[in-house]
Length: 418
Image 1 (cartoon, rainbow, N blue to C red):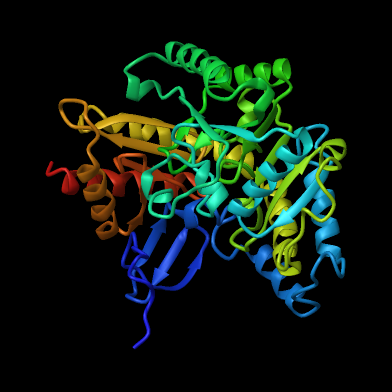
Image 2: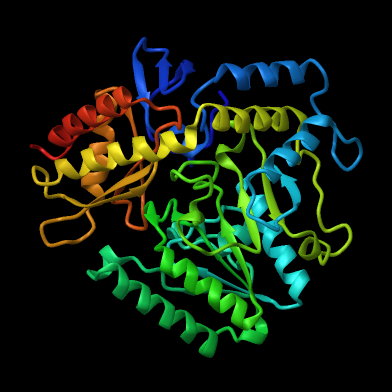
């Protein structure tokens, strides 16, 4: 009998019958509060009626219009709508299918445009699983080990992970900026460095918001040295952090921005955006792909952007994120294993530690699994696997957040033996 690969590990045993909004209904007859959203993908909730209708209508018109052969209206409309929310000056867009593909397109463009070979990424970043994207990833060895050699020309600099270092944020930022300068002096010279790449909130690396001053410091160095600045908004973008783009908590702006995940509420589409001047420096024929900018996915993305705007979901993410973060912090005195509670908007996380302050992956997994029995779906992440990430849909209500926290508290008592 044929089966799925044994390398695919399910975080929960749930088999979905149907889903709506923040709720997943299993074939077991139970209704689960979904605080995973397909790893931040179902931004407008499961099966938002406007997204469903847009996709249904498009399926009846044309499903696949390969966009270097036949142009289709959903992609033109999506490009126009993205122009309303993209950072100023980023007026040229290339579409692909996944975050990994968009990341690879961004570094291909950066290398071609600058004629330089090297990319500097930051410890804890996750940029994808394909070879070039995995080469930029340091969120965990499982993403990059076992299929070497990886792509050359990649160098890592420290991320200002204040909790891990036991420092305040300013100390961590000062350290990380000094070390970035040191990397430029000792490992990847300015003359060889095409781009910096970073997430505004580390995803698989532990749901760590990047301090605004660190983003500003990278931008200043990029300007000073003639290096491009790529911001990977695959998970943090499209309103998830309480701003449309996660980097907007700083004054920094990217030369290239990457988006995917929440862009189409579950349909596979990704994009990079840059200025027309920069995009034109790529080599002819270097961008393309069979399924990139698929018509159905593009129609779903147009509907998603409309819903995000019309229903005020960016602001909802901010308000509900503040509610969720405050409620999680209120649990810390009762559960000292909750070493750190952090997040922006609806990217919230709890890092579990032992009494000695060491990473406690067993506690994180126990809580995540105990939550399933409370009909709450969560995920773990972090380099040590000791972080539980909480990723509600942008449509989540105050009542659903309250329910989620109550269920999380129950899972803490069971998982931690309280």
